[in-house]
Each structure stands twice: as structure tokens, then as C-alpha cells.
Length: 337
Ligand SMILES: O=C(O)CCC(=O)c1ccccc1C(=O)O
Ligand SMILES: [Mg+2]
Image 1 (tube, helix red, strand yellow):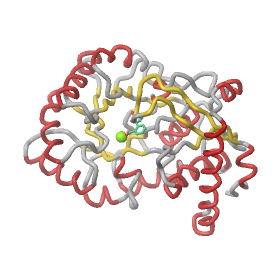
Image 2 (cartoon, rainbow, N blue to C red):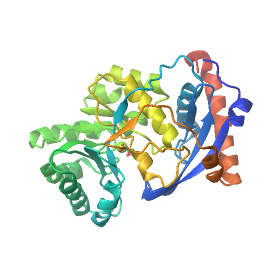
Image 3 (cartoon, rainbow, N blue to C red):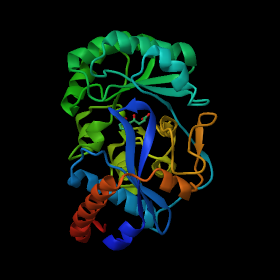
């Protein structure tokens, strides 16, 4: 695939600020670059604190999706998604869950800084009570527990029957230790790796070490549909595709990764358009009857204007895209793009 040159890429780019319904990952709004590709609308939205070397992978994903005519694209069918429950108080659970129509799986954030295990227990119990015994519940600690804390927490949370615990501890080595301790203590909670895949120098280390039962894959940080699918294949582990709290454009990119993976598939963390108070498409990809469609999204040009970021933020993003584009161009000889 030919990289679009920088001027063309920037001319095709809109920088937007999307307000969130509920605070998530410590922010109230999500900034994103929405790109009119030659093949599809595409998104570039690495988190603000990420360095260029890491953000360049996200640009690679955006370019593949927007400009690569040889990327297979499915427009029929649907993707099952999970409800994503931020680390809210139990009094907010009804209003959060109401945004995830028909979801049979929920992922609940736990180990939030400043909260206690009792808060996590109350939240998981509250979701179990509301969704019933047939629902699959996962928790995501974002690496917030030590091995001891994770054993203690999962011993209690296992009562609510967990599909898995995502990134309970921060390093792959800790996940290995934790899995041994859980087996030794008869605590039946599978472990999923997220940050240990998407932020690792070597995303296959998790599989080699036996650090996880499931891997979480996000198409932007892993450099696109093909690279992410290849990582899943190479690990040989079951995968959950998830968003990085993207606009509906990024969600549609994630849905194509789901479609590229073999079945059976875990319900995907692609219900997160429901956490946004505004979006760049006419019909946001919010779950209905627990699913989102694979049809290409229709951009709302008026929304791109309404949500346009302040000019200092536009300048910041355009400079970031320029630097990441230069990094990709420099490595294009080896990687194709
Ligand atoms: O997987 C989901 O349900 C939603 C996506 C999500 O949780 C997430 C979104 C942005 C950044 C990090 C994460 C995460 O999985 O840790
Ligand atoms: Mg996670």
C-alpha cells in the first residue's frame, strides 16, 4: 500500500473532541482525528500521553483502514458486544446499563485508585443482580492490583462467577505468578491480558510465558486489522476485540477485526459508543439487542463541525500526525507501511 503523503493526509483529517457521558480513564472528553480515507472513514486516536513511537502504530492502523484497497471488508452481519461499566457507584448502575441494550456480557472496571475492594464487590454484585445469572461478567483492573491483592480480590469476586479478569496485575511475570496462585487456591477465574499485549515490545511474550488464558486485542494500538489478527493467530489464544474508547468510526474498524478472526469469539468491547455523549456519525454504533452492525458508518459532516476541537488542539494533533507519519515513512522500507 502507498502511504498518502503528509499534505494529503492532513487535508483529509478532522480533529474532534467527543464529550463522554461518564468519566472514563480519568477524562471527560476524548480527542480523535477522523480521516476521510480513499477506501473508508478512519480514526487515529492514541491517548494524549502516548509517545510518538507508540502512537505511530495507531497511525499505521488508521492508514490501513482508510487507504488500503486490499484489506478485506465485511458489510453483512453483526458483532456481539459487551456493556462497559466504568468504576461508578452502584446508584449509577441502572443508568449505565440502560445504555447497553440487550447486552449479555458486561465488563466492569475494578481496582480504581481511591476505591476499596468493597466498592468493586458492590459494583460486580449490582451488575450480577441486574443482568441475571445467564449474563457473562468480566472485570478489568487495568493492572491495578499486586499479586496478593489480586488473589484476595478474585477470591471474593469469584462468587459472582466471572468469565475472566482482565489485566489484574501490570506485568506479564505477575500474571504468571497470579495464575499459579489461583490454581493452588482453587479460585476458578481465567486471566485475560490487555496492556501486556498492546503496550508490550513483544506481544507474543504473554503466550510464551503462559501469562493469560485470553488476550484482549485493540486494532489501533496493534497497528491494524491484519497485524492484530496475526498476533491472535500467533498466540493461539482466544481473543476479545475491544475499543480504545473510540468514536463510531474506530468502533467500525474494531468490528472488521472481529470479522477477520476465527470463531468462536468472545463478545467484543465495542459497545463503548454508548459512553460518548456525542459522535461523528448519523447513527452511532451503540448496541441494540446486544449487537452492532458491520455496515460501513455514515459520517455526519455537521457533527464534524460541531465537535471540531479548539485550534490549539488541532495544531497539536496535526503536529503529532506529522511526526508519526515521518516515523512510518522512515520504516516503510521494512514494513511496507
Ligand atoms: O473493553 C471494553 O469493554 C471497552 C474498552 C475499554 O475498557 C478500554 C477503553 C479505553 C482504554 C482502555 C480500555 C481497557 O480495556 O482497559
Ligand atoms: Mg483493559
